[in-house]
Image (cartoon, rainbow, N blue to C red):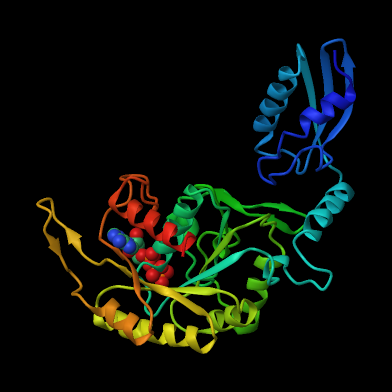
Length: 348
Ligand SMILES: Nc1ncnc2c1ncn2[C@@H]1O[C@H](COP(=O)(O)OP(=O)(O)OP(=O)(O)O)[C@@H](O)[C@H]1O
């Protein structure tokens, strides 16, 4: 036999799949009725028609059956606007200080910020961002990606994400893919419309992404910067002085020459440079012969000039076939390079 308290204690183990907090703590459980081994209860979803309702139902049924329930009858409803507002403000209070500053920016927050930058576009900055994030998540870290490439956002498409973030009272729950939480301007534009903003607006949005996103507890936030040394990179440097930077280049001297400017800017803003990642380093043929399609030496030269090291050489390779995603499988050559890079960053 069990009593109401046993039911509540058991349900404390069930998490909301998006908010990753107990459905009891989120005040979603109401009106528990017990009749011998039969339990009836109401669950108030945070938003009406929550797509993850079936997951919650399954988890609740399984959990209550484990304490001996023979029958579990769930009635779903949705929180009122007022309840949702209260919940959001409770969740946000963990996110933002009384002065409106994102908690994660406080020096003791435990979040490590890594900005991924490049001089030229198209050298693989976003590829590095998503694959490093996924590699860190595979190693058990809690990872987020902030796609700060406001004009040239590409992370949702590169990770094959079609879902939009759930909005709770104008606060976004980041979309999760491959165990990584993601926020991007791409979630908020319609039909691939271009974003045409000037500097101050950009600053506002990046701040918004930090303050009005329920990131939860993170170990790493990877920031995919736009190429070059424009407004976003300057704002980011001012907003997140503790960020470290990874500089992505191809071996081509023209690319590394431009990447030097991004590296010098990192030095100028006193960001620590973690190292240079050389992407598209070579193409390995079926016979094992390495073809250096973009030449050799640009990354080393760049690292020397910035007094840092080349910390990864990533060859050319196709991501998983026909998935449209740019995430490389863990056991692929590139997947392994990223696992090593993630381990190096973890144990540096
Ligand atoms: N090592 C690689 N092997 C094969 N293709 C790659 C590799 N790295 C990147 N690519 C491909 O090159 C293209 C450009 O990569 P990506 O979008 O990561 O570059 P970027 O520097 O972020 O570009 P942008 O500055 O325009 O956002 C993508 O189509 C990506 O899939």
